[in-house]
Length: 130
Image (cartoon, rainbow, N blue to C red; front, top):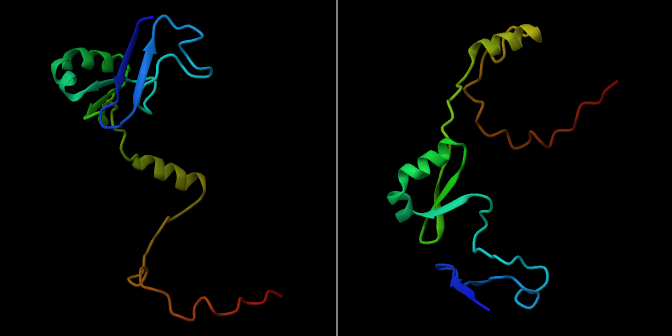
């Protein structure tokens, strides 16, 4: 039965792929292909491969894919499709204020806003409602 065995760089873990998979070659409940990564469903390439295949990877990302680039077997960065920044919409603030009949959201912040509260502030009893 042919098999392929390999180890994950720097992890001290090993995995084996048995092809074709049989009942004897795989313990119950285990997938026949194990990878030493928590990254599932994404293409993973080493930084050296990414450098050599940048055009191919760029085309894949342009089609909506994500590529995880690793250094020494650990994720270093992701290649993801570009997203245009939307920024702050000032007209949305005006619409919100009109909708909720708000004149001013925050008109003034005191100079002592960040100063610590007096020691006895939290120890004062709550006012009694009548």
